[in-house]
Length: 220
Ligand SMILES: *Cc1c(COP(=O)(O)O)cnc(C)c1O
Image (cartoon, rainbow, N blue to C red; front, side, top):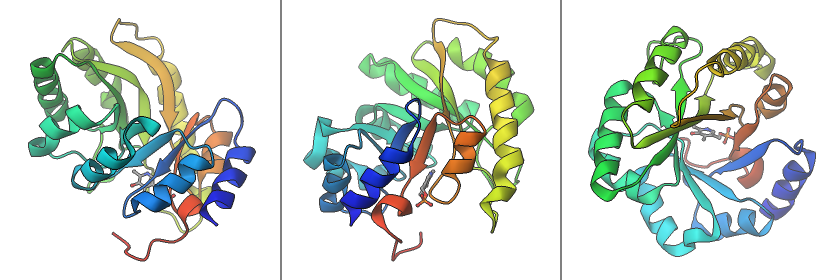
């Protein structure tokens, strides 16, 4: 079932769109199935869950952190992950940079945007993006690879379209910024119920969990 779901989704993605399998609450056996079906990137939401999976699966996949990163977990996270999609504040950027300096690593990251400006959500406000990017690239040990957004909750994913469009506009205007620690490669947006709309609006990276693995029994 997982393998078939995954193959179907991969087959329907345009060539320029990268799939990230969102693996929160999934076990190693399930994850191996999506890898066998052709997934190359795994997106973990929790540092605490990722360690064991990375030990067992290792470099069969590229590992992305897609959930909020607490500062006390940064040291572990920069050792474990290949890319952090949820770089959501300047304070966090400073901590990531400091931990990376200790281990001589340059951490690829996406800037997370709070596109609907929801008070309870993490991420940079849309109007903060350009100035924040300018600051982060000067730190030295973070390489910005693009933007990520979750979008607000909507019963009907069509309601997300204007937010995805706004994120694409931000992405396009950010392209005027140039720096060695900057490459505008990824616009990561769209999940199981919204990825088609996100792609129509310009996403080139989608993060899909339920659509590959089936419904989560534990809805955290
Ligand atoms: C869980 C999760 C997804 C995938 O959500 P589904 O609805 O299961 O496809 C995508 N992005 C983030 C940040 C997530 O936590």
